[in-house]
Image 1: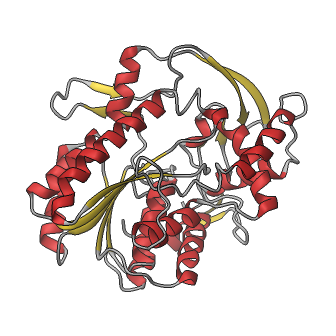
Image 2: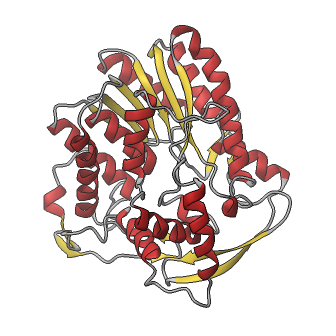
Image 3: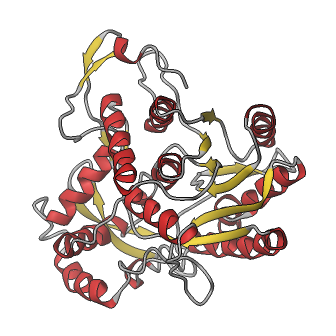
Amino acid sequence: MGQVTLTEKIEGNVARSVNPEGLRQMLQSQIEVVRQKGQYTGAKRALILGGSASYGLASRVTAAFGQGAATVSVGYARPPKDDFLGAAGWWNQVFFKEAAEAAGLVAKNFNANAFLPATKRDVIHYIQSELDGPIDLLVYSIAAPKRVNPFDSDEVWRSVIKPIGKPVTDFTVDLERNQLLATTIEAATPSEISATEHVMGGEDWELWVQSLQAAGVLAPTCKTILFSYEGPAVTAPIYHDGTLGRAKRAAEASARQLHKQLLPSGGEALISVNRSVTTKASVVIPGFSRYCTALYQVEQALGTHERPIDQQDRLFRDMVYGSRREVDTLGRLRPDATELSPAVQEQVATLLPQITPVNFTTDLPGYQQFRREFRQLSGFAVPGVTNEFDEKKFADLAF
């Protein structure tokens, strides 16, 4: 390919291009966030399921560069092929391995479907043959559109983002055209609700724990954590009260079961209710981008805005391994407490009615922040990085 000028492509709310050098710089900035806060006592060997982007990648960064852990990541992203430069998640894992090994840390990547039994077997074999001990941190951060029934390969479950009970109309931002549009989503059918629970719930999380335990590669004192979401009242019809929310409640039920299983040996299963952040998965949720536009604008004024790395490092440093656990009545960790505080939500509620298709403008500071963070997920809009790509510069990198 040689040297080419990259063109950023956004279709609707889906990014269709990447800038590898921008992704490298974004990863380095995440590492620097953790390094500036120093080392803390945590895991020695961490397995990150869904470690190619967002919460999973940030969890891996703080495990490696904050805790000094050897990390194994299972991510599923298209690699470069012919004229296709590859997906952002593929490059994120490549650059993580490069940075971790330069720091003397063990880093292993699996570009594979975490749901498949074969992937579980491959990861277990690696732990048994290459790591110097069992996994003592298991992070489950999978967001996927479908999952094959592990006991019946002819059945495929497909997740949907839909309300339950009745249709919902909400405003969402079209990032390609910089417009705010009204969108109506029909209510999910019972089969769609069930399928979403199978894909986005805790079934596969439980299977991973069982498989690792059966193989003798899960430390007795292992901590395992899955990320949930509550969100504000304004997004409840499409999220908390919809199919995704139903799946999260199923995952929380799995956490209770796993905790009973792990507690006698000194382990624990945790749920973290995370704050609203810009991810490739979240931007397609109707109403979410409009809410984030208002939220980010309020947070900018208050100085409380957090990206995934800011939250995840705080979560693990202060709550999972630290002495400052913020929990709710259900025992869930709540790093989203500041976002959902009355002081923030009252201001967001005042701003939201002002963000309509009629008066929406790209000059809104909250929208500029949201769109910039979305573009940076693919390596664009990164300060100091051009859109020039030199294939030779990346030729020696290994997955």
